[in-house]
Amino acid sequence: MKPTSHNNDSRTVEQAVLVSLVLKERNFREDLAEYSLQELVSLAETAGVKVLETMRQSRDTVDPKWFIGKGKVEELKERLQALGANTAIFDQELSGIQVRNLEEALDVKIIDRTQLILDIFAGRAKTREGILQVELAQHSYLLPRLSGHGKNLSRLGGGIGTRGPGETKLETDRRHIRNRISDLKRQLEEVVRHRKLHRERRRKSGVFQVALVGYTNAGKSTLLRQLTSADVYVENQLFATLDPTSRTLELPNGKEIVLTDTVGFIQNLPHDLIAAFRATLEEANEADLILHVVDSSIEMRDEQMKVVHQVLEELGAHGKEMVTVFNKIDLLPPEERDLLTAESGDSIKVSAYSEADMERLKLLLQEKMAGGVKRFRIPAAQGDKISLAYRLGTVVETDMDGEDMVLSVDVNAQDFEKYGFMLADHLVAGGETAKGEHIEG
Picture 1: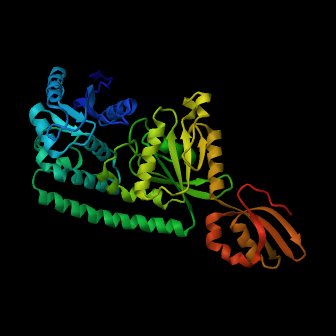
Picture 2: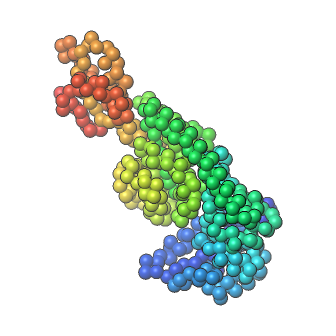
Picture 3: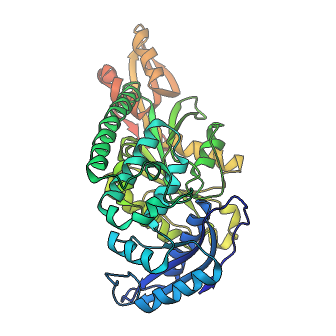
């Protein structure tokens, strides 16, 4: 048992003991088990819970009736009574039967990790889409567990596990829940349809789209604010922002791109939540480039990066071009900065609060947006074609050769894909280079 620090907030309703079950496996890592438990502490505090103590138990298997061992249940009951706690929060997902048995044995509210995360999301959702998605995830989670949440749903007062649909008397009957799920899905389909129309509009306009993804609290919203002066909520807490925010960013060459901040990831992110938020997370799928923002200042950054890659793979976005942004390097000693490496693709090390680092990041985005330098030979009399060449990117060199104008253009990849065919007859054979190379003669 391990006491933990907590916030003394008079408004806090829940006083909890946190419990984690560690299964003995060959690849068991003590640091990962401890990290998961400390992450649960952060989640609980984010939800407004006063954490009184943490407990861990190691077992070979999960107890199907109690989740933890019967002896540990008795020990937990003693600690709950001694501390005056009214809630027990488990670091893993519980079945309905386990919740019911634990409630009867302990006579306190029982919450698992999934329900805790869903509750935080319920408190953070602000847009209609976000609210619908969270409610759908909560209903989908609670439907198979109704028989195990009798006391939870009938307890008076607010607190975790009662936000959103918890206030609509879920114990009424399963048919009502299923009807509500169907209704929510219909409403979300309409929201998704509108979102797709916006995406199509952006795609047709040729705007280069960049999605910010990363573990929760990695600094995505801070980056968005620093790059675009966006009025977004920034706080040092888990899931500080939930609904996606898109802002326009002007690059040094004057071109504009759209940056979209997505919901933060976390290990053991509830499957119901991933399913419900698929439309939102698909911003990563639709993007031309993904910026994977990493909190480089924490010891578990490699594990957090793996979680992000796993979720992206589940969404079908794992093969997208990606740049790893190692954020918060100002919190690392110089010798540790040199050890930062990305699994694949390019990477950049920045502090979101450094103007110089933000300029470097903009230049990298500009390079990613570029399609290389191409040369065109256009008769000087064809002003419309010359004008088009100028619109395809940045003209880096011009020359006259008799009656022809020869232009070297650092093209915008998307613009060239859409309009380049109109200058196909004027493209100089062999007159194109990769990004950053110099054209000879």
